[in-house]
Image: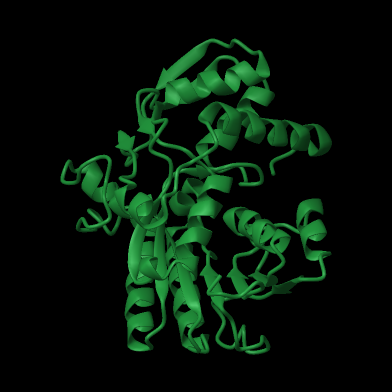
Length: 333
């Protein structure tokens, strides 16, 4: 990492889903980590406590929307990962104003606070930035990075998250350029894995299968998605941040090798449960695109990245985590 055996790394949103897995990887490599989280989504569970018990990991609880929230931290970092955000369809639909306020204010406050001493900034964006154009048929699928982004209806709650991430991308790019700081914008595509909460398709289907829902409601069975296991996403992130050729670029992060339908995804999950319910086919949620798949040409050209975790193996691991959690806790994660 920039020629250093041990880097000082700040992970904002470090108790959340991708943040936790990223921090686990980096801590295992010996880097000095500070994790910042308000714990509104992340949790002080046994996994996080074990991670923070390492001598090279510190956890700071802070609300990034508040000015001065990071003032007590050291001001010298090699890398800053900006992962903190309100995510999840349920949050977007029930309180879109909060999604925009928290996501926009967090990134703006962090950019104002950053010391500007050459640290590499990684900003976590999303494939949702393409959703409006894809739904309108104006963008190709698989979707490359250099396409126009748009929000077709600013009043529609579904697009609040995309709007907040488009603003975040613009803020990071222009602030970093003005201060001559290296940055990478990573647009995540359907990243999944253990410890990701319940408001995403794989854990939601898994938990309903564990509860033996019958008939089993399946929304948008023919929709197509390309799922990326979180360990592969972390590998892509760390490669990009360490590579000068990637600095200043927007890069899709995902797995385009096993695009599948929602119906086939359910079959994979049901095989894990050995459960054969009657399937009740229902329309896809409003605003949900028929197909989502990244064009990974840029990621491959820059890093040589190739996803390693198959859908079958990744879903099996994820399902096992949720089943163990359910047996232990018996409630929503």
